[in-house]
Length: 385
Image 1 (cartoon, one colour):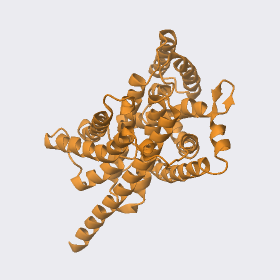
Image 2 (cartoon, rainbow, N blue to C red; image 1 turned 60 degrees about the vertical axis):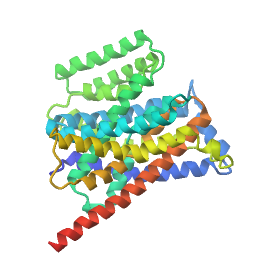
Image 3 (cartoon, one colour; image 1 turned 30 degrees about the vertical axis):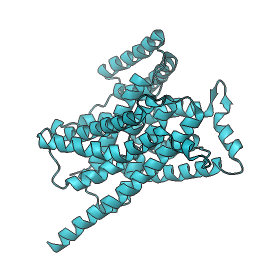
Image 4 (cartoon, rainbow, N blue to C red; image 1 turned 180 degrees about the vertical axis):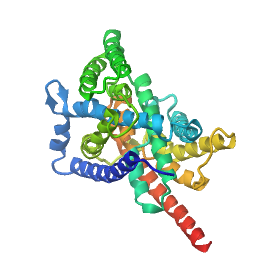
């Protein structure tokens, strides 16, 4: 399978970004549990105007992350893996399974408790971390497996975005929502009129974000809406969609996501009370990500192929799908993001973050071990032939 230039660039950036995210996470946890713990954690909650630094990161900078996700999804839909329905149905099915089964597992653990609102937490896959782990296996990884994981994670993120928009929005202010959607409509008209200058779309995007922020719908949704308003044209290098996506890769991968990790993993660890360390929602998160994700991805992929809705690429097999499914259990960025929306108690938020990190590291390590053995076996078979 031939990989496009932009896909290869995306994969390489996400690979390095995953390693950067891991370093930032470990550094943040270390600082939060050091002698400067109070100063470090207080910094992220200090105010700039009426907003805390953490709020600016989560509602402002992360909108740019969602813009990049939207541009990547748009490219996949127009000319990528999702442009052909038969090819698209495999990662779509996998993503659906990877959202539904973890959600059911979380629901089974937390039904009837105060923590049921976190049902979206184990439904997400972190693209940067997952691709970062996959890249450690080097050139033994088939391109189709990279494409499958990338498409799966992008669709997964779309699912998480829809969940945020539908279930984690506050009380809706109709006036501001209509104003935001009105700006979006104007941008769509500009698209149809073939306005191929980027600046008007960015100005419109800022206005749309401001109205969305005040509407009660989470402001980061603006990023995805803006991505689909920007003309894709034919997707070539001269198009503004391509140029913006190309320009955003490095700032998002090496600035925005690392800052998000630093701000949101400043977790003070306390092991004095095992009951408070492992409440019911902790098991729901761990089992949802580590067990539910690979199970859902495999089952729904298998059913999709079995009933001939899609087909398995010739250089893939079910053991490789299982391996990638385990990597799908790396939730991190989107899981932490949903945690911030699902809970209000800071101790619950910090504990949930800790278990997301624990589950993500477990899934990453297991996925690496499983795929390393699977791809090693393939090399041996080839040599014997």
